[in-house]
Length: 295
Image: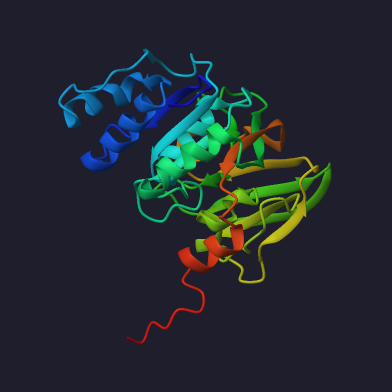
């Protein structure tokens, strides 16, 4: 039995079928440790169905209405990003249990959960602080959380032609992009959408933001990095007179003429990091660096 009484907010993807055995192991061990278990409302129904209502929870919460010692994300990186958006500025450390596929953020395997929880109760872990960016709109409401742990992408709509983006850094004109879009990425997001568009991998505490164009009309327009204390201004033109903004995958439609400002948020996302894990080993494993693929 654990001596300390800790509370955990549990997030999951209600539309994704998770391995029942792994779910049961997570909740059984939390119960064994006499933890207070709070489950997100949308996830609770699918959880009860998967486990035949055989779980005991302290409470069910909605949105960001929780205050616990830790948060647990059960799923892939998408679930982790949603959990991070709900945690926001609460300073609650997040444990990412990888029940999805790639998992750069959710890097605790289900088989490691018990050891990870033991480490937390024993204080044998580190906190990895990751920078967050914020989107501000001059004359139109965003309609979702403006904070992103990974990236903020400005994109053309599916049936539209290229968009034009006039970019300025700290008030100084940088360049005009004609492209399918532009990604503003944190170091955490450098292994996500930005990487698939030719952006660089940036170590988590690099103190850098990266601008990566999506399918630019000119091949001379390449990704560029800046210190993360800069302020980015974007003015967007579109033949369809509107465009999409994706904030860690949460898409909203904005009208042409809306001036966007992106800057570093006043808080960080805190991630529980096991001392046996390292960022470079994660890169080698997930990107299969050095693997012989000829077999």
